[in-house]
Image 1 (cartoon, rainbow, N blue to C red):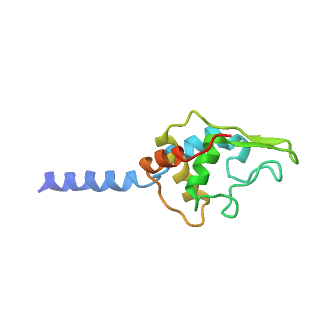
Image 2: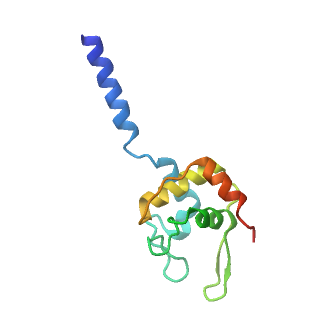
Amino acid sequence: MKYILVILTVAVTLLTRCQQNPYSQGKIIYQYYCGNCHMEDGSGLGRLIPPLDSSRLTISEPQKLVCLIRNGRPLNPETGQSMPANLTLNEVELANLINYLGAEYGLKFQTIQVDQVKKMLAGCHSR
């Protein structure tokens, strides 16, 4: 009986522990690649670099977000800023980043899978 109780306790601990921060890799990716410009809290830099709030973030359109991250955005003549393309993130990292952004900033959050990201990348037009 004691053996079963120990196994049950360990199982419950592991299951609840894994769910505490399901988007931890996405957060790390955000902090490394995006946080310098969009700020750690997603507030951006006024008109120079937009905040990542639900009114601007295209998380409800993950295809656009995948393409934006992959291809970047050209120079905005008003601000003199561009968003650099990110060609280094693989499909798993992109899925984790987008899922983190959706959970953190999205209004209508939806989880996307790696196979969906692969299809989305195939539909992106490079600039």
